[in-house]
Image (cartoon, rainbow, N blue to C red):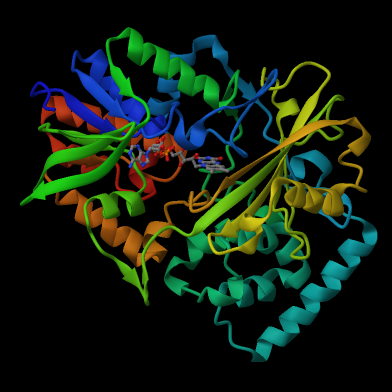
Length: 462
Ligand SMILES: Cc1cc2nc3c(=O)[nH]c(=O)nc-3n(C[C@H](O)[C@H](O)[C@H](O)COP(=O)(O)OP(=O)(O)OC[C@H]3O[C@@H](n4cnc5c(N)ncnc54)[C@H](O)[C@@H]3O)c2cc1C
């Protein structure tokens, strides 16, 4: 099956694919989106459960890029709300504030914890007079002590990234950014170090991230765009520096599409396979190996704490983060009820991925059943999602640290008729997708690369 020249094919109906499609349709271009699932949204899809309509995990909509903020406004209008993104740290049955503005310098820590922390800082400072600092763990401990490092940054970061700090070599060259990033949480350093992530005003779609997806999807369809659901890309056939055709499977029927221009929002490891590009790490073929298990608990009473999310740094606990959808001032949760999402970050080989829903629920009960955060008597139901290899915790620095990721990005750049808009961070994905559409219209592909390099932080914050 062929289709008219000039029609642009977009791979994936996640936020990236949909944003590109919308921008192209606005400029009068025709688009077809190919999506393997039966619904739009990808990692931003809505989790619907009765009257609940919540995000997939904890979703923070960054507003670092003004063009992206106007995009949100254009799509959502008054269905875009602002809220207080109050993040807490759950440690030793207590909530410690991540930001000092809530409970001052000591953030709700007990006197005994503060005293222990101070003694520990002194002990670590003495220890590192003689000891060499080889890893970021050494650097953190020598500055803030083991206990405060664990509570305020290391514990959660290690879970999120699925890697111990003791395995990350210290890099003096990048230490300024890593250092401020890792220690900004302590509050002994500046709270918003580079001013990018700890933004003051947070926005969220009124009906959760799925609200943005549904609004975009409807606009695309109304503007004449086509979304082919349940259609999987099997192969991208190359001829020299171009993709010649796209082999697709729609409900078992294999066919082929040809087009002069393709936008891909599919994750890099998948697109590599579709292009038969081989990357190896040791003996294994390269693919993203970090994923997440999300256990949603639905309660018939309001939530018991005012935080949008809690980080859980204690290594003895498997849960890494808890998101509280009830406090967003959104319509994600019905009135008088609440929903908490317990996230376990894990590598794809983690045996937790093999547990059934009941066994995963038992972990939540064991770790939090007795805490003041939940009352199991008020639990209405629960639901579990496993997302192995979804690569949930990336940021721009991963392109620096992970050479294969960066190599893959560079290799895709050489394919003339492909615009790869996969990036890390919702705002950067949307910006890349808008830029890809603009560059296709103006035929200036270099502009796209110049403004959307995933490795650079700076050009994005204009
Ligand atoms: C738990 C969790 C929390 C997160 N929190 C945040 C956050 O707070 N802030 C933030 O900025 N980011 C966050 N992220 C990341 C963010 O959700 C993603 O980066 C973003 O949604 C990716 O959008 P995308 O369109 O690039 O890709 P995707 O959403 O992955 O969309 C790609 C689409 O392509 C489709 N597809 C894949 N393969 C094929 C194929 N062969 N054929 C056809 N279709 C295919 C998929 O089904 C999917 O719909 C989080 C992610 C997770 C999982």
